[in-house]
Length: 440
Image 1 (cartoon, one colour):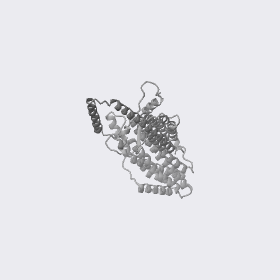
Image 2: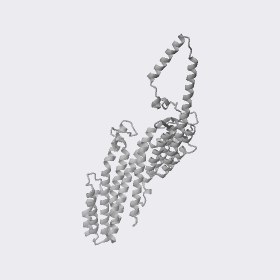
Image 3: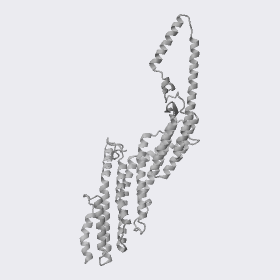
Image 4: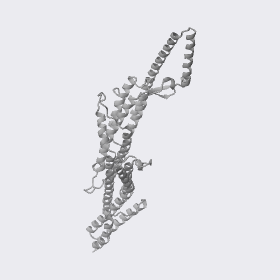
């Protein structure tokens, strides 16, 4: 009797909710609170049913309705970001650009990094839905069978929201791997890392700018995914006082997003290592004196290498990936250590030569000794005119002028050597300070 009556009343409502409903849903904190209150009241009321099978039937109906509502809410909140990404991918495919790179003129994340924006939107929306459920679970005051039913409902609901979020974010994550051509980047990076610089054959070049932009996105994807997995683990830990249903995994480490995170983290570690090596090698190659204070020079390799090292370490730390951080730490230690390129560059006086075409000459770097080009030309014309007059009157100062020029040249060379030595000493001091800063 009563069982059939209840089923006849609820079944149409369940069907309407569970079928592919695509209409607008009410949303907002007030709606979530109202739905939670309705669920509590429904379970409390139906606990008075005459038969246990009626209670079980009603509980399943309530669970289905509540979880369906939460899944639809998550989809509705994530839809704009995913739709934006889909439209960008379609536009890129239409114009033959498979990289989905900077479509549009806007400077915001939605246009420049649509994958990052979509994954962030999905996982943050799921977190916003899951956080009140955890608080609701911890605040349950009822005892007995009603409390047990509510606990099971909240566990199932949290799992359904999590599964929906992981499915959506994994889809976008796979699009990101494809659109940003991560496998091609990794293949090129491994080729670059394996080549021998002593060979005469042409060396594989790395697009440093493109790789850096890709790493910025990949690092953020790893960060937001790692934060979400950690959050899900805390949710499951909080709800571990009662056993989960058999079909629910009790750890985020067994979920698809976690495996995708491991794949992205491995790709990030390889690419960041390649970029760091390429940038540090380039810093040694183009080393030249740079003025850091008034008339104080250091080899540019120290400043450039410190900037590259700090950026790489900070970005690796932001991914919450210990393997990537260990890989970068080893690379940085190798570069700055006794056998590293930076150490050898300082010992070999690389970047201390003030005659290096990569830097300005010594005379131009000191305002007091700066010689205007027009003034120099006038002096040369004056000297030539006086020499001509001396020749006419039988006076030859060529030998004296040669000695004077020789003395000036020797003085200029000694001054450059002295300044080069000072530059190296400043570089060693700066390198020591930079090493301590990196180790901290």
